[in-house]
Image (cartoon, rainbow, N blue to C red; front, side, top):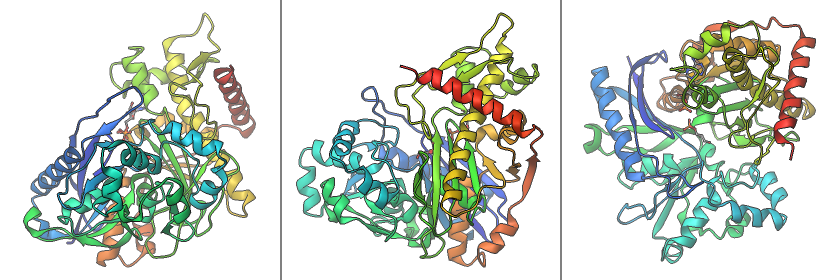
Amino acid sequence: MRYLLALDQGTSSSRSIVFDQAGQVVAMAQREFRQIYPQPGWVEHDPQEIWSSQLATVHEVLAKAQLKASDMAAIGITNQRETTVVWNRRTGEPIHNAIVWQDRRAEPTCATLRSQGHEDTVLSKTGLRIDAYFSGTKLQWILDQVPGARALAEQGALAFGTVDSWLIWKLTDGRSHVTDVSNAARTMLFNIHTNTWDSELMGLLNIPDALMPRVLPSSAHFGDTTAALLGASLPIGGVAGDQQSALFGQACFTPGMAKNTYGTGCFMLMHTGNTFQRSQNGLITTSAAQATSTPQYALEGSVFIGGAVVQWLRDGLRAISSSGEVEGLAHSVPDAGGVMFVPAFTGLGAPYWEAEARGAIVGLTRGSTVAHIARAALESIAFQSAALLHSMNRDAVSGGGVAVTELRVDGGACVNDLLMQIQADLLGIPVVRPAVTETTALGAAYLAGLHAGVYSGLDELSQQWRADRTFYPTLPRDQAQERMDRWERAVRQATAR
Ligand SMILES: Nc1ncnc2c1ncn2[C@@H]1O[C@H](COP(=O)(O)OP(=O)(O)O)[C@@H](O)[C@H]1O
Ligand SMILES: O=P(O)(O)OC[C@H](O)CO
């Protein structure tokens, strides 16, 4: 039996999972690490804690699985995306904390870039909107604000990386400074047509070339771990940003295949094959994980408040004492009784892009109960996701592609059967929950396994994918449309100024 070791470095925890060749979880280990909030709107991580927590989980998972490093055919890495690390090549020391994807400090720089009219250039080359979310302006901030950083960068003394690059540097003791296309695509510095760092964008943000990692397909030889670290040297054969990795782990390899991850927020990605599909409907275009050197693309949209609305019911409203209780409470009423909940706690993401919107609960009557609010909260996750999928379908079909025929789901909230049924009813297509819901880590394991020759190709992986449960739509389409219309009216109320 050949095993694969996946390192899943997420925003709130580092995890490691050992998979067997059939893609089943053998063992898992997880460690949380510190979230650092130096100012409102700023979010940082200590790169050394990212590394030490990740390494601890690797040792722990091997012990739990009762396996040795030498039993692993390869390592796959998947990671929180956009988070930016800069370190000194000689000492290996970071020169600043990692600036996390959620951090908004670079917004003024982005506003300037937008006012200078660079939006179309950025969008056409990178598929992205100009936003502080992406790495480029975070990197620029570090070079401008850390004393001496720019001069060191120009001399070639510093290295930039997203979290995958940082982990690979540590795993290989500085011998590999690399990343993969799906992570590079999140920097706003990478041309996703040519798969190269873009000199015009690098110039626009004033980023010296010498900082940048080498970019490889997502299934490739990224380096070998130092033998002393794990007791044997292991090849790193797969790397992908976590959302693209989940798309891969869900075996969504062809145009029109899509997945939605229901976590704190929701991330929906739809594969568009080797076609760069520019969105007319508020989505972004990104590189999908690439098993070969042929570029692969996806449309992506995110919902800021997904499962987090359930956390708010628990911690803010104190209507439930654990997230799992929401299903029973919402099930205790046949519908939301006309209540609509728009959880725009931090504005609304795609496809609305309403940064100033705030949460609203509308349609309350004297008969409304906390159960109706709980049901409306669950529905809000499904409404926001449906709005994303509708935008994707419009983009895909207008670009000559195909609409989504089933939605594959994962993430912490996909265990909620009621939510999944509401989702299928709104979308009018089956919603499919896989047997293995650790799809993010599985994607990285698959990418590594392909490179190590554990798998023959994508067909084998497609055949390996198994559904746990399929939720079929039961609601007549006109009623689903009427619900979406009421949702859109509620969104307009929440965004009215
Ligand atoms: N049964 C459930 N129904 C709805 N939401 C749930 C349920 N269980 C967990 N959640 C939500 O799922 C989220 C956690 O999912 P997870 O994938 O671990 O998130 P993340 O990776 O973003 O930390 C939380 O916001 C939690 O409220
Ligand atoms: O770490 P996660 O799962 O919250 O994912 C973060 C995303 O990659 C941000 O783009």
